[in-house]
Image 1 (cartoon, rainbow, N blue to C red):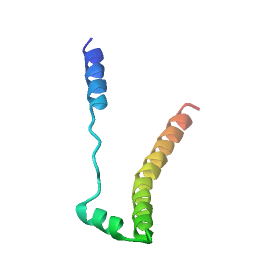
Image 2: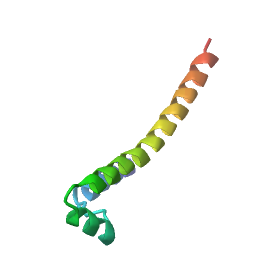
Image 3: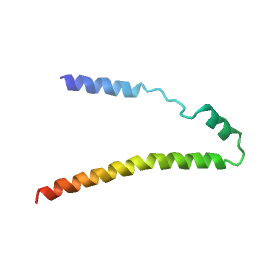
Amino acid sequence: MFKFKTTIVLLLLLMLAVPTDAQCAMCRAVLESEQGQATAEGINDGIVYLMAIPYILIGGIGYLIYRKFNTLKM
């Protein structure tokens, strides 16, 4: 019963999340004032690069764990 209550509370808290802007004031000012948008594209590429590295690392570790447990069953 405790696990059910915890799940309900967690779902309610996730539904009440408030969206926010994640850019600092200086980044926003530079991106809004530039005409060519080259800086905005560079910042977006950097964000994607920084986001991809942890997923690749976790995926690699997950694959190694999967392979280790499958070889032990033979």
